[in-house]
Amino acid sequence: MILEQGDLRRDEDEILKEHFHGFRELTKTRGHLAAHFGRALKSTLLAELAFCLMLVAFAGNLPNAVSWFLVAAAVTEWLLLFIVVAVFAASLYAGRLWKQRPRKAMIYWAWWPISDLVLCSFTLITGALIGHYLWYTGLDPYYETQKLQSYHDINPALVPGSQLQDAGAVDFSENVNVDRSSGGCFVHASHTYCVAPIVYTGQLHSGLGNAPLYGSWDYFAVGVDCCNCPNQDFRCGEWRNPLASGGLRSLDFRSRPFYRMAVEDWVGTYQKDSSHPLFFEWVEQPEYQVRRMWHWAVHVAILLVMALFPLIFFVAVAGGQVLYWLVAARIASPHDTPAPPEGLERAWATWIPEVLAHYREEQEQLFSLPISPTPWYGAVPPPG
Image 1 (spheres, rainbow, N blue to C red):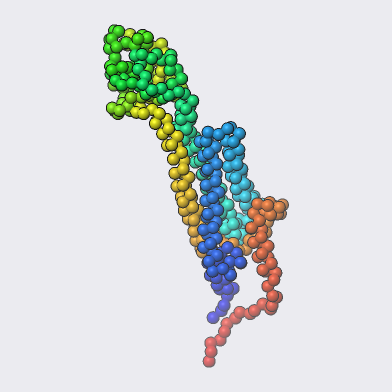
Image 2: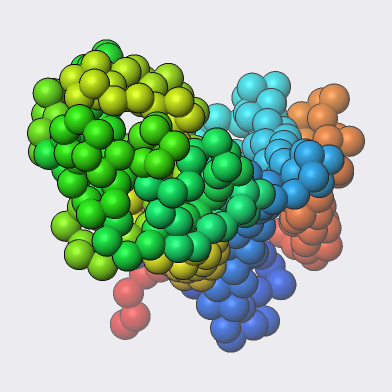
């Protein structure tokens, strides 16, 4: 039987593959497991930090300087991770480290930095998009409505719209409702803008019947794409809710000009006057709906932050397990770490010091081996 050099290398790999984090790990019984979860936790915290910074920056009611500071902090974190990956990429190009022997080490050492960059990029973009969505769908309408006044027990037949130009949330008096069968509409760019009068008794009469004392019909429930044109079946807001008796001021400034055009259509159709039209979303308990905007946005943000942590941690652990399989399959390895390419020594020392330290450790291990005559492997005659 001839003992070949490949047999020795295979035996060495079998010993090292369960403890692939360096020579120091050979003395640790559970070093691989601790490093596996510890590194995944670090990646999770980095990604979660980027998500929280962008979420608060885009969704928080903060001064511009504070928001920009948070964005700058998140982008700076991403840039630091990008620079680390860029150092690996430059080393591959400058030192021709894509060759098979150094390639295994480069795959191993670049695995976690690339994973960090990918996860951080995902959470940074996701945090910005979700923060933007929560701001424009919940928090911005809440803060804008809070700047306006709340009114109670308003009778459209007695109070002109000119007195409620600062209205945000309005509770109407009893017997006030929307006349869904006597609305107006305006069609623009494939959208139908719908209005319907909010009147005492909930029914519009012809002529001067049921007319406001001040002679102007100023209160309208509004919505987009919730009626046909001509509008004789208004289905906007909480039109099915029999308890709805209030309005939230419409803050959709893009739709406001088209609502005015719909009111003009209504004025021409029913021969009425509207001097100071006010546009409302028809709801139950409008003041509660205002508070609900804030609570909804904050609860969604908290739930997302809490749900994202285990999700990112699971992905990071799965990535660590893939690296473990790559090491076991001899596709990646922390051993035979190449020297830093010429001109990139300082970059390695600054951005990937653990790789440089491992390289030096391996060199010390090699130079500290005792010098002995090279053994001779040959055929061993069978006994007897």
